Image 1: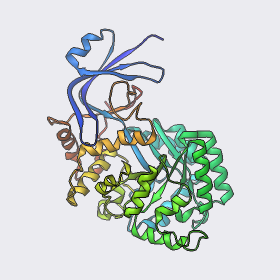
Image 2: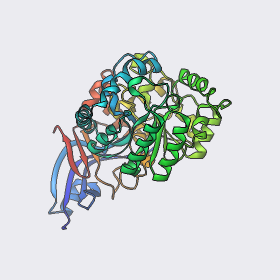
Image 3: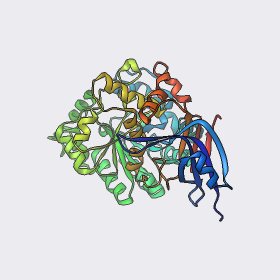
Length: 431
């Protein structure tokens, strides 16, 4: 196969670390064909690069700025239609809106149609990877992984106790699904108890053992709200072997669920001992600022995620939208919420540069694909998005200007991406 080159003319903003990103104006991104798709071969000044590749196809996107495709590390694709429903409390929102809606996904036809629609939504906001929660129905995992363009892990929620009739499984049904789906999808499967109150501990223990045997991921929710924590600990006092369990985290630890391939959604209200446990086991937290935000800001009002405390404890974390607890699918909205909430709380260090890193490279690192994607370094797959290039003499200033017009009309973040590329091919465009 002969080598093919494409050159994308645009500005480039590339995340490097929590504190550093590189902005290159009037750049050329040279894309080189490979078996895996187009990879980034070189990035440099357009006036020098173009002349060095005389046979390359030129894609002129002058006036646009390229950023890496996003990784959304916690979202429920089967909750898209309830994301703007009233959210006075987490448990009430689940029982009144979320669970009745998820029951609709029992229909394979309904699930397939929704998956195709949702896959287009993901591309339109520039999301090309992440961690997905499906419903209890096994086919909702298949529909997600078969339709979503990018690098995702997905799991069916396990609900074997304290669940509504239309969203309940027996232990045997739950374990059978874990067995079949982990065998089918391997590392792309995520063993997914909805959370400790809805999943028998013996199911979590057996499922975690099987997931680790297959190399699959594990994901669930942890300490999202104080009411949730009290509810969980109250329930588990009546479970044999858990009567004196000290913390929410210890329930998952006792079930063998913690580890480097485990992602805990939220993790807001955690003690020092719990953070030490998460750090020691390498467990990840998916932070969802738009979902945790005050009710007046369309969130569930769960509280502020103290990222400084998390980092001091040595716990890994990345950003997620938590659709439908979060109101909008755009990771730009998630980044904005992260910066704004911490600014109001007078916590320094919550920059847009940090938010971009946690919405791209950090997610790729969690999924173990950071050597292939997550940033715009040479050798990476050309997974990128294009937006109207903002002003600014450095990366942080450019990101501030990019977000500024949408502070008061957050739904417009959904229209910010002009084009999305996966492996160097345009998979969404309004240019």
